[in-house]
Structures are given as C-alpha cells and as structure tokens.
Length: 444
Image (cartoon, rainbow, N blue to C red; front, side, top):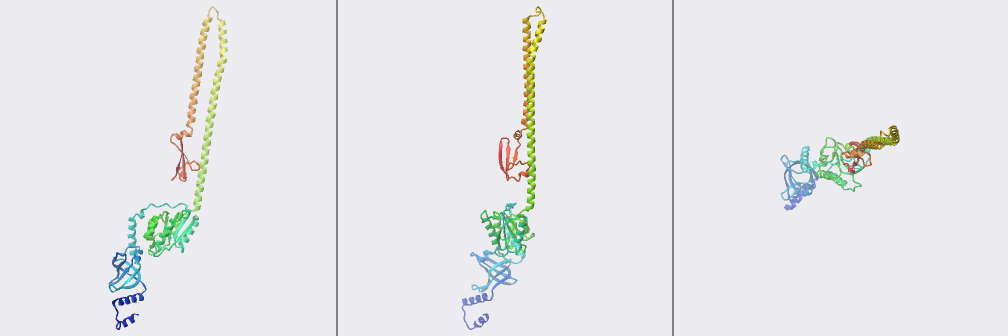
C-alpha cells in the first residue's frame, strides 16, 4: 500500500485532509496493538479529562494521548520523568501533522517506579487514617468462613484442607481473579458482597488469600478501592496475600495479617481436639468445685445442728436445776417448820413469848423467801446472759451476716457458685447476692 501511494503521488493531486487521512490509514493498518517503553515528558491534563504527553528515550520522542476513560482506570498518578510501559495503537493527528500513540493501558516500568508509587499511596492512605483503625477481633469459633481467592490453584485447596483438619466449618468461596488489571475491583466487590448478604448467610470472618509472587503479581492488592473496602468491612478480615516476606496495603488495614493462606485458616479456626480437652478440664474443675462447695454446706449444716442440740441440752439442764431448786424449797419448808416447833416446845413458856417468837420467825421466813427469790432471779439472769451470748455466736455463723459486712456470693447463669476469676470469665451472666437482695450482671 505504501509503494502504491508513493508511486501515485506524482500523478494524483491530494487535498491536505485527504493526505492526512491517508497517512492515518497507513499508520493504523500497518501497526497493530503495540507496547512501547519510555519516560513521560510534558504531561498535560486537559479540562476534558484527557491526558497529553510525550514518551521519550534519549533524543527520540513519541506523542501520546490518553483518553479520559483510560486515564480513570490508572491507579497511580502520572508524573514527568516516570518510566512506563504503554500499550496502544499508532495513529496521526492532522492538526499539527504528527503521529501519536493512543494509550489503551499504562503500567509503571521497573521495580523502583512501582515502589515509589506504593510508598506515595501508602503515605496518603495513612494520612487518611485507614491504617490506624481499631482492629475487630477474629471470632474464636466461626460458624461460617468466607474465602475470597481464585477458584483454581493450590491456595483454596490448602485453606479448605487446613480448616477440615483443625475444625470442620462451613466455607463460602467468592471466586475472583487475583492478578490483572481488574483484580483489585473484583476482590473489593467480593468483600462488599459478603457484607451485604443476609445475616443467615453472612460469614463470621473473611479470608482474602493469594499465593506468593512478584510485586507486579501482587499489585492489585495495593489498590485503593480494595483498601477502602477492607477498612469499611463490618466483618473481620484476615489478609493472606503472598508469603511471609510479602507485604501489601491490604495487610495494613486488615484486622489480622497471616503470613500464608494456610496460617490464615489456622487463625480462623481452633483445634477441635485441644478445645475438647480444655472443655473436659473445665468440666472437671467445675465438678470438683461443686462437690467441695456441697461438702462445705453440709459441714455448716452439721455445725448448726450441733449448736442447736447444745443449746437445747443447756436449756434443759438449767430447767432441771431450777425444778430441783423448787422441789427442795417445797420439801424443806415443812421440815423447817417442824424443827422450829420442836425447839419451841423445848423452851419454857415463861421464858419465851409466843407472840415474839411468831413475829421473829415471820420476819426470818420473809427474809429467806426474799433471798431465795433474789437467788432465783440471779440464776435466771445468768442463764439469760449465757443464752444471749450463744445466740450472738449462732448469729455470727450465719452467712447472711457475713454478706452484711460487705462480702458477696457470686453464682453463674445456671446457679453454679463461682470461686475464682478464671471460672467467672467464661460466664455470660453473673448473679451477685448481697445481704439485701440479688442482681444480675452481664460479663463483658
């Protein structure tokens, strides 16, 4: 076609527009989709959103046009001096008689350029506060685990195998591409999709996983859209991108970073055998503590019974002594009268006046009766004093009085008594008994 054009130009006359269109046609038909590496120079972004710049190498310059839809897909800012690899098609611009490259894809060239872009993006996102968020705790025993990764490859197989080996749990897979231009958007949409599921289908934790690779392979996990989606997720996220030495921006905003996808599965699930042994241990401790508590209460009841029997015996003994004293008084009075009568008969009537004797004996009888009454009252007061002391002793042994002194008795949700902080931490509700009532407290 070029030969025909050069041959016929001596015999055919062209207008400027025709010639420009002919050159444009020759360029577009003879150069297909090409890749060019060079350094950006003279970057200008028009108000229309299109970008215009030159791609230079040494003294050679290639004009480039990046249309607004293509520019919007570029995930990093363009700067003069940046070395890039551009894919596109050659065309021409009749306005200034030049050929140009219409950009369809643009990527940084070389590790240094990508690291610079990554550092600038990291600093900007850190300034926004995305890396200083409060991390959500990973559930100890999730009922459902969401996995965002490629459906092919060893990563998903390793995760599922590890979960089944440790604690079989339902796994929901959201397949995405983990490399390529649209990979970051797909992973972000998967995270948002999990968060928008109904509660019955929503996973308790999300694992974002990919195998190892170069910085170019893992570049989509530095995507700003993905970082914001991870930050806004209501579901805890474990990032497991690459190997232990690989770090991406999603690692800095995720709630947990795992060095490998297999480690992420271990972070998400406990070991069932260890959990069973722990539960058995707690069950044994609870059983032993319950038995000991029952024994303590049984001993307290025995002690209360002993005190009650002692008091009953003491009271009966004192009552018996009182009865004997009463009987002695009743029995002794007639005998005393008889003695006095005998003595009275022995005296001469002339020596003793009956009236005086009766008066004297009456006074003596009154005095002795008053003495016996006082003695009986003192005995009763002494008995009442000892009874009061024993009552105070019995009252001090009552656990309700212990509660009045500021102590409390703590039981679990099922009424079990809690004797240590370790046991109490595993109770959702604590029943705390005071001397004047009982309250329930939620254990946070």
